[in-house]
Length: 153
Image (tube, rainbow, N blue to C red; front, side, top):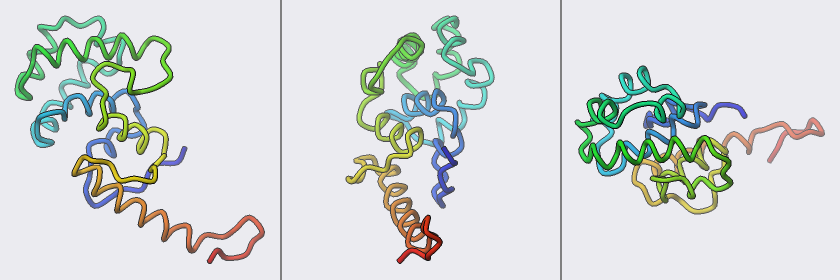
C-alpha cells in the first residue's frame, strides 16, 4: 500500500503511518483529550513501548507514569494492556479490539486499509481529513492515465 497523501491538517495518524499498532494506540490516547496533550506523550510512550508485546510486558504503574497527563490514567493503562493482548491474538474486525470504537475503526479504515468509505466520519478532525482526501483522490484520478494509455476524464 502506498502512503496516504499528506494533508494540510497533519493528523497524528499521518505521522504514525504505516505502523498500524501505533495508529490504534493513538486513537485510544486521543479519546477524551486533545491532540496537543497526546503529542507530548507519544514520543516517550513509543520509545518505551514500541509495540503490543512490550505493552503486555509493562506494568500498569509504568504506563500510568507516562500517560497521566492525558487523564483517566487507570482506565487508559488497563485498556492499553487489554488492547495489546487482544491485538496479538487472531482477530477479524478492528472494532472487536478493546478501546476501538467508531473513531478508532474509521481511522483504521482510512489509514491502515486505505478505505475512505462513502460516508464522512463523525469525528471533527477525521471528517476534515476525509473531505480533503476524497477531493484530493478525485482530482488525482480525474487526471490519471488509464491502463490503455489514454488520459482519464
